[in-house]
Amino acid sequence: MKLKKKRKSVRMRGSRTHGWAMKKHKGSGNVGGKGMAGAGKRAAQKKTKILNLEHYFGKRGMKGKRKMTKIINVGDIEKNISNMIAGGEAKKSGDAIEVNLPDYKVLGGGELTLKLILHANSVSKSAREKIEKRGGKII
Image: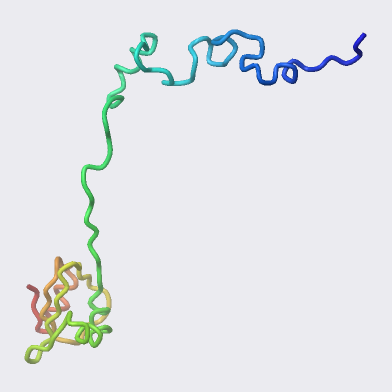
C-alpha cells in the first residue's frame, strides 16, 4: 500500500489537458479565451461586442510625420555669430549681418547688440521687437 500519493499535476505532466476535456477547466468559462480572443470567423457569441466597437477592423495610427521646428534664441545667435560666419550661415552686408536660418524659429531670449537681417522660418513677437529696435529687419 502506498503511503504518499503523487499529486495530479505531477502525474499529468505532458498530457496537455491534465485529464479534463479540451475546452472546459481552462478559465473564462467555456468560451475559450479571454477578452476578444478567438473573435475570428465564427464569433457569433462576441458579435455584439465587435459591432459596438468603433475601430475594431482596419488600420489606425499616424497619418503623416510631424515636422519638428528647431528653435534658437536671439542671444544665442549673437554668441555664435563668428561660428555662423565661418560656417556660411551668416555674412556681413554693410553695417548689418545677414543671417540665414530657414529651418529655425527665432525666440527672444538673451540680449542683442548687433544689427541683424534675419531670414528665418518664423520669429516670436519679442525677438521681432529686439531685432527691429537695433535697426535690423526680418525677411
